Image (cartoon, rainbow, N blue to C red; front, side, top):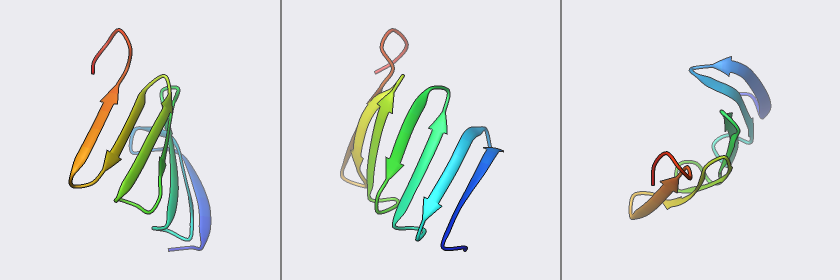
Length: 68
């Protein structure tokens, strides 16, 4: 993998960007911004969705008015 990069409109996501993969990854999808650092252990989601995950132990995600 390259040290840093970005891909737009790939695998159903609006944008995927990474720096020193797998240490830091950002994913934008339908007005939701997710940061995975270090991937896949920690996930923070903000924007249209909110959430947090400590994989594989705990996680939650919600989009107000649609799901929680």
